[in-house]
Image 1 (cartoon, helix red, strand yellow):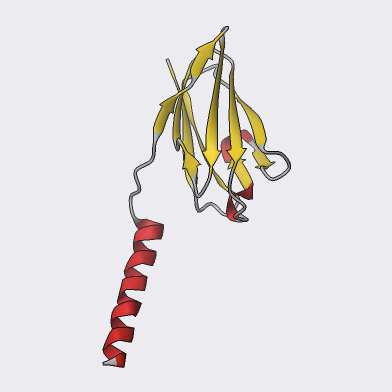
Image 2 (cartoon, one colour; image 1 turned 180 degrees about the horizontal axis):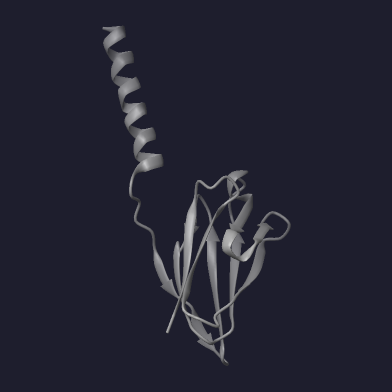
Length: 124
């Protein structure tokens, strides 16, 4: 009986790990607010990124603020590989990053360990 219980727990843990790392997880989506010809929005960093996908309008200067509410080492940095940005989010409660909006494009970002992901989409 103990062996069967141990086996079932092991199978459940393996299934959870596979789902966690390889499963398709739905994220939240938001549009940046445009005020006085500039775009600003905030991403909450708490067990991931919320919203995980942001839409910005092309040609309007944009600033994305990352509000750190999680002390997990993995989420302590946000990395925009395409922009060459690696920001430490633990130095202040809110870290601002300017995003180029000169053309329609996408910017993927991730935590320092590349486990949590987000995306910024600049659209026409």
